[in-house]
Length: 511
Ligand SMILES: *[C@@H]1O[C@H](CO)[C@@H](O)[C@H](O)[C@H]1NC(C)=O
Ligand SMILES: *[C@@H]1O[C@H](CO)[C@@H](O)[C@H](O)[C@H]1NC(C)=O
Ligand SMILES: *[C@@H]1O[C@H](CO)[C@@H](O)[C@H](O)[C@H]1NC(C)=O
Ligand SMILES: *[C@@H]1O[C@H](CO)[C@@H](O)[C@H](O)[C@H]1NC(C)=O
Ligand SMILES: *[C@@H]1O[C@H](CO)[C@@H](O)[C@H](O)[C@H]1NC(C)=O
Ligand SMILES: *[C@@H]1O[C@H](CO)[C@@H](O)[C@H](O)[C@H]1NC(C)=O
Image (cartoon, rainbow, N blue to C red):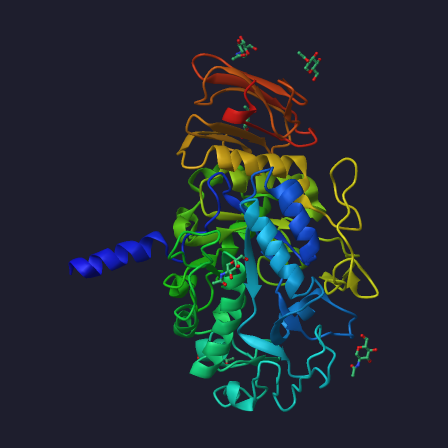
């Protein structure tokens, strides 16, 4: 019994629930479709100095080259082999990125596409990012190798072979997701090939994985793969550390498959979070920010210590995935900054910031016909992320994580880490405020009239720089100053027509 307790204590300490970010790095950023060389530079020049804990990178495994439409972003979700060879770079570049990011204390989380290989309709040949031969018709992927024995078609009972009915969990797990060839994950051989791939990434130094399409895999099959994983590389992680796992499960509440089925394996993406926050900030269905007083589990969300949260992700920012038109994105930048600000100030969940590329968004009959468009490129080759003199990005990279308001709220979350949710105030409408113990305070005005109010902040007396309208710089503020008196109270004035109708102050923004 004692032995058992000791083992579970160790398992608990280093389990797959720890993101392994450095202290003072409480958020990660998804650098969607970036090249490994640019991520390595971004870790050194921007993410480490600004307190980002880690980066979710696009799938590193070789994928099918799709020419119709030309080089869509989603081709990276159609693996051909587990060679580290994509439009983002080759294995040497991947290793260089992981090493350099780890050396400045920024962790790398790889997007692991292990539910399936490429679509059944892709032509056989060598049009793959590393030139490996594959034949979807005969289900032959010699570069792994997988053969037709390693796929699920025998188990799937639908006429098309695809998932037709999401209320049938057997179809969702055993049939093809939009025609993608579905791996037979109950086979030890398939589990071993996947584990070999993930172990290769672990040995190089990644800190964990986003497990793509987890809902389409049985939780027990995912567990069997995770049980084969190495501990993290001791060059950067304590002995016995396990990979941080977060599983992509879209559970909006209307289907039999629940996110909670996957808690035994690690964290789970909470898709209700961004969908609900978007509805509130857009004031749809009569929703108001004052309702956010009990934001978190009371809204039907999963337990905070299992949730990975985000305002938008690479799928639902372009209308696929979950949440529909309520999802806030960089296209609605004013509300988006408020949404990301709220997320980073609020204690619920493990936070992921999105960093996107522009595409020629164009709606026909309510549908974005250009949602497929891939990253900025020259003849298919991904363009470099260039940095402008004002620190924004060029070449059509949006770089939301470099927007002052978002960058400064990432720092706010680091400063208030571990502090309780305190001093909530609302006006019964869309003016709200809350604190994080004696370390931080934030005020929002999403009403159509101006706010002038005196609030208890919980902060020590002093002059603070608002980190939304500006920065603290050379012992001065480039934006609004907030004066907290000795009783912790401060006046806040926010015009409804302000560029950003919210104010945030914290211990490190005090003059
Ligand atoms: C392979 O891709 C190239 C362009 O990258 C295209 O011209 C060619 O038609 C493709 N071949 C096949 C068999 O699809
Ligand atoms: C979908 O699957 C569920 C559960 O198996 C079943 O009750 C329902 O009738 C199915 N719906 C259709 C349209 O086949
Ligand atoms: C861990 O990383 C170091 C540095 O890149 C490397 O030399 C070492 O081989 C790695 N360890 C394992 C077990 O692969
Ligand atoms: C908050 O909104 C209410 C209406 O719900 C309004 O009467 C009140 O003046 C507002 N409070 C402030 C501080 O502006
Ligand atoms: C601080 O900045 C303000 C403008 O933002 C300026 O008017 C003031 O002179 C500055 N104070 C000092 C001490 O530099
Ligand atoms: C807030 O404003 C009121 C009147 O406008 C003023 O009397 C009070 O001193 C101010 N409080 C602080 C902390 O600045």
